[in-house]
Image (cartoon, rainbow, N blue to C red):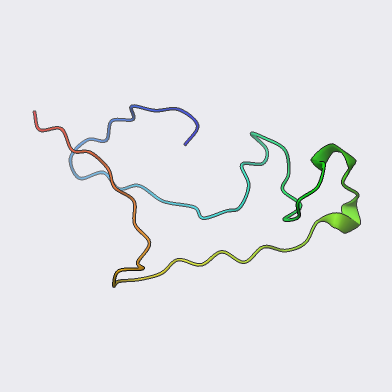
Length: 68
C-alpha cells in the first residue's frame, strides 16, 4: 500500500497481493541487477514468489490494532 495509516472498520477484510515490483507505481523489475532504464524487453524474466505457511519461517503481516 503506497500510503500509511489505513483504518479498517470491524468486520472488514483486506486482500494481500504478493508481487516483486510496484509497477505501475515505480519502474518495472527485470529481476536482474542492472540499470532498469537500459533494460530491453528480453532482459525481463518471470519471478517466483513464495508465501510460507506456519512454523518459524512462515510469512506474516503484522498490523497494529487500536481499540476504541
